[in-house]
Image (cartoon, rainbow, N blue to C red):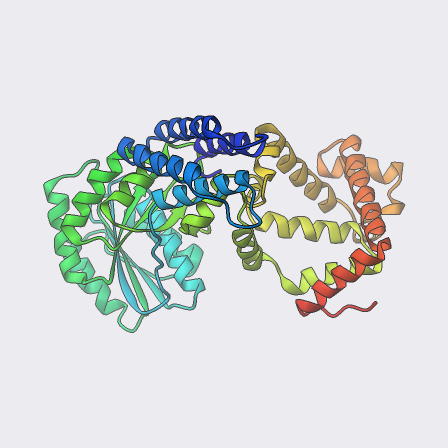
Length: 446
């Protein structure tokens, strides 16, 4: 989960408001102290925290709730709005012809992020080229080449060349006619004069429209000086924060970067190349507060779900024909959307209910069920009722599981089928579902 520790502390503060019988000065001051403590523990700048909580307290005690909104809801909305302010404004990297310069220190995830950004722009219809302009790290060219193959984007580089400027010049000729060219530059373990000088020379040669700093969220408040140094060298147009999927004290990086005036474009929320999200403060804070992010969930689903397959499953559900094969396809689509823990943060309130071991156990169970179903015949998948003792034993042996595991899967399938049957028996709910499906273009017969 993005900034898990901070999110949990803030959600506890929100619950204190939601569970209160009424809002008074004491409650507001208690909540303000809780939020102060949570932000400071997350390494957010002290002055920024004090100013933000001062504004929050003043608004909570003086502003009257709009018509139709309770005082509790009003204070929660104020908390949300003030937190959105603290993380700064967003910046979008448009899908248009441009050159992009990636800068940052070693270990920040710069090369992987260059690949993630290339993938994003490629999926948005751009012809993209990647440039390995890091002439100091031996494995930089090989790493970027491997990433390029995975996302079907060409990579230019020369491991024997020691001048980043010469590589940049050759790359621009190589990728002449491409929409987007992304330059992955050298880093250092700390801010050094020769690094800054090299970055200046490459920036002058490339003349990039966007110059993006890649920062590890664990950097904390040191993100401020780094952002400032790179900004003075090349004139940053944006920042990408990486490793926001753990419990890092990312609040420091968020607030420190916001203070420099360099907007955050993307956040990295995992190790995979698809784990890059556009940074939108309102959606980010919604997830942090446990309010969910349905928009992101829909976008994730649209990216991986086969619409024709989903429509076919929907038709079978409506007709009451739901087999283990259909259940398998549903699980495959869910798996394609990413880890269960990540999906849970997008659904309001679910992240708190599915915690730690429960989440991992559920993920493992789904994976085990897929293996079991891989050991079934096509006939068994289409006719689960015929799976009796002898078949259960054969399937267990073939999948390397136990007969108990196989029976657990069959039990879950029967529960899902019964629940669906009960749902379809509710005429009102059935009409609502058909209306939604027809609105989405799925042809259904009543």
